[in-house]
Image 1: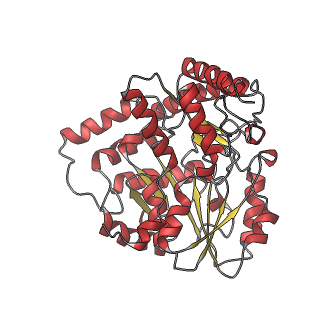
Image 2 (image 1 turned 60 degrees about the vertical axis):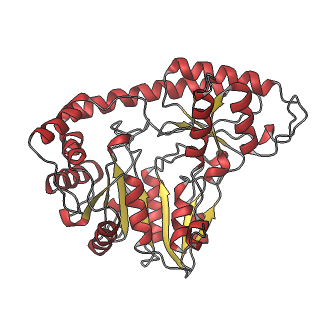
Image 3 (image 1 turned 120 degrees about the vertical axis):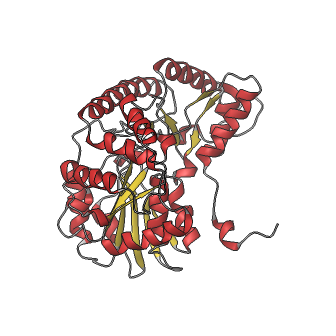
Length: 399
């Protein structure tokens, strides 16, 4: 089939690809432990599910507005004011089928062919594909584990040109777990005020999973609210990945464009998920459930960090958010396997670990950092312990 040229610019998510391979092995009876997927292993808190049941019983099953139900947008507005010091009106909020659609909407409605889009690396795997699909030019800013995979304001400024249209970043970051501090974001804002035509997408989907004092959102700084699209959702913090509810708040013109675009693609997000979202964002009991999950992630982080630090050739830093480690595995590249093959890059190392240790990870090349691996600790402590035991043994056979 002769597919469109734009589809040639889209790369399959390697997190999904690795998950596929792990499932194929499982289907063949292999005991595979997955550290590849970015999904909480917790069930959605019951009170959130009950809210959806009530909505169902009340017949709330009809088309919602493309922007989202008024009740949910009001809950988002209150949440942004309460937690993020971001003040928007309900018409400056759009609800989408997951935060991924929110980001895609935002990219497609502002990026023209030839526009430069700055993306600090490592980055979430879908950012570059979205920009490429829109015809934009991705400008990556490399980082290292030594600086916690962060971009300083001075470095950011050095990458901005007269072709820069957009900057996309996440904090907490997938895959590194890095969290931009309030002070670091203040320095970014100071630089960005010098370039008033540059737009920003701030992906804050992991906001609820932080292990330090929660920093300010970029949109909360003076001069930023009229040019920042703040993206969030319910998937990660509320263990609601299957509900597909994300949202974006930003300038009214940008939101209106996203409404028109989403109306053409998918219309509004499901009504039952939005009813559940109201409780998610406004209930004190929901907040307690979220904190309980965060504490479990923090315990798992401590365990995985300790076990990774015991593996020769693996360099580890301490992630401050999300549920990933992103160790530097440069020292392992060039080593030989037992059959004489050479581990040339992180893709080959991830496949070696899957084949020999039966543990699924994701190569750092998927995230713009080819000398790293991403390991998710969104699984039980027993699974983490067994997985790291297997990985340590498999890597010890490299020479």
